[in-house]
Length: 180
Image 1 (cartoon, rainbow, N blue to C red):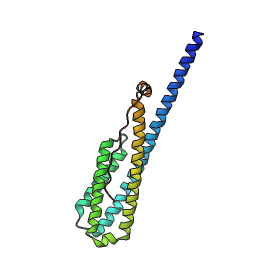
Image 2 (cartoon, rainbow, N blue to C red; image 1 turned 60 degrees about the vertical axis):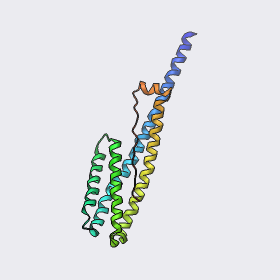
Image 3 (tube, helix red, strand yellow; image 1 turned 90 degrees about the vertical axis):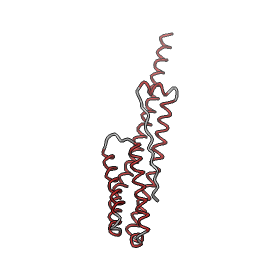
Image 4 (cartoon, one colour; image 1 turned 180 degrees about the vertical axis):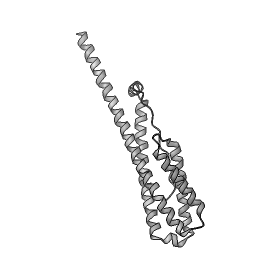
């Protein structure tokens, strides 16, 4: 009788561990997928920047400092994308700086009526705004999923499984986009 009860208890414990572990894996995969969405939007943004810089350069030949900073930040962002392990704080700061410089391009356009009226510039601005809006949604989803994973790692009884399998917290992606 006690042997059967012990076997049922052990079997129940194993099933419980499997269920909790699978929930963690599901959340981990959601976090990875959400980061992939952010990465795609960052790549789209970085791919759009040379087109924007070229259009601005055609009209604003004397504004090389802003264009150089945007190009440098874009290159640094692409370098970061190629790394296997990304520091999200550093990536967030870089993308925030890039957003600020893109905002400077918008301000710059105000000084050049021909640029401001350029159909190509207007289309690029709209596309950039759409990308950045999508990026904000992706960032919110990613951070929400990270919050769920981190909360599960912190709460009992899941924290026992997290400790047992050495599951780690994920880092939030902080990025304030100022360009509109």
